[in-house]
Image (tube, rainbow, N blue to C red):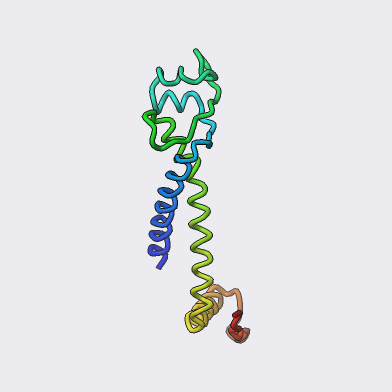
Length: 141
């Protein structure tokens, strides 16, 4: 079960990333800070000189436009940097909500999971078998 949840989360992250990459690239207003050394590593030393803050011997940071449909690799990389965190968090929220909705609409599954949790707590010695409290499943809707 854990493998399925992880794989589906990664799948959803990729879908959100593709949509986010397109949207951010179309807007052409997002910039991200990228170190001059990273720009040199991604695009070469000659491309580093295109950014004034990365002048000769500059080891600072440059504002790089996030644009996936660009001929410069640092701009494509900047787009992934802008969208990555958003896609991870959004996928996490979607999956958390989906689990709660699933448990809400399947009370027998919720009861089964409560029983499994109880048996694991007893096995771990956290509670005694006589402490079982039957928690009634209350419909929220």
